[in-house]
Length: 254
Image (cartoon, rainbow, N blue to C red; front, side, top):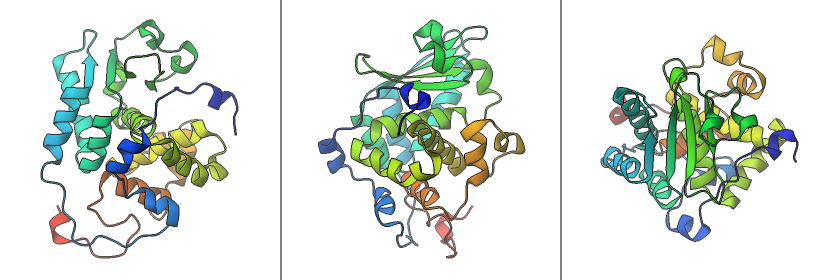
C-alpha cells in the first residue's frame, strides 16, 4: 500500500541479513507465531548499560548547535536507557549505520540543517536517512526536549526499526499491522508510539488526543496486544510478556 504518507519516508538502509543472523532478536518469533512462553526467572543484563554507553559514544554523534551540555547529556542518558535492556539490540545498532543527532535551536527549522522541508515543518523530532548520506540523522528541537517527554524514545525507535531490523523483519511488522493502520508510514509511527509506552507508565490525556495516527494508536494501545508483547520482548527480553498474569519475579520488582 502507498499514498502521500508512504512517498515521504526516509530511504534508510536496513540491517544486512547476514549480520542479523549472527544477532537474532527473539522478539520476532512473536510476530510469526503470536504467542510465546513467559521467561519467569530472567534478569537484566549486567553489562547492558556499559554496552549501550559504548555504542552511543562510538556510533552516535550529538551536534549541540549551541545547546547546553546538560541537554546533550539528557539525550545520551535517554538513548542509553532505551537500549540497555537488550544487549543483542545494542549489538545490532553497533553493526548498523552510525547516527548524527542535531539539537535544533529555537527559531530554526530542521530544513536549515538538510532535513526535507515537507517532513519537518510541524515536527518536534525527525528521523531521516538516505543511502547517499554517510550516516542516518535525527533532529530534535531543543525547545521540545523539555516538554515532549518521549521525544528521544520516539525518534530513536524509528532509527531502530529502520537500521537494526532486516527488510524481512520490517515486512513481518507491516504484515501484522497494515490491516489495521493501512500505510507503512503509519505503522512506523505505531512502533515508535508502542516504544514510548514501554518506557512510560501511561499516556496523558493530551497525548491520547494528538492528531491522526498518534492519538489513535495511543488510545488503542493495550497490554494484551501481540505488538505490545513484541515491543516488550524487544527492549526487555528478561521481563514477563506484556499481558501476562504470572507473578513478577522478585528480582524484577522495585
